[in-house]
Length: 259
Image (spheres, rainbow, N blue to C red):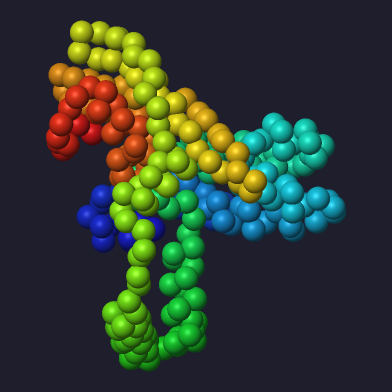
């Protein structure tokens, strides 16, 4: 890892996602102390059947863990004494979404993209592949991938998708599923205000309505918008809550300095 850091000119990663490897965690702590280390959610959830093998309702536990309703999970299934779950709770700041939203992850929470690349290259080479063979097989793999992408693009070009609905009709349906209602405004200072917005979402089958409150802080002097959902910091995508706040503050244009 030190060699890798040297190749990067000493620039540490903003964030790094790994499995629960203890040696890897120690190496990151020593070599990349300023990098935000996050645990792969997919690896954690994949261990549920094995770690809770004796439980009859292991499937229900797996679903509950996706929402990380922790207290409800532990009490409902009487898992207070489970060492593995207790260790996960101690490390919650490294894998529970609410604790890692202050860092940019480009929408990633797992190492599956890397795992898929590993799986792809294993079809062309293995641990016994010599250095001379590696370059030849690596070139073949890249050519195969490029040809597959070209074929997929050609198939898409031949397909003609007919959309019967108008854009306005699609927008109307989406607004019925997810929408943000204007809420209250609290003036924190002469230039800073806090808006409390209500988000309504239709989920599940049968459909049920879920609402939650979010806060958007607006600094009119600096033109800065900060939402409690942290979507912009986490994914780099402007959230609908900030857009609603812009409408409430009558700001007509998006500017880079706002975020």
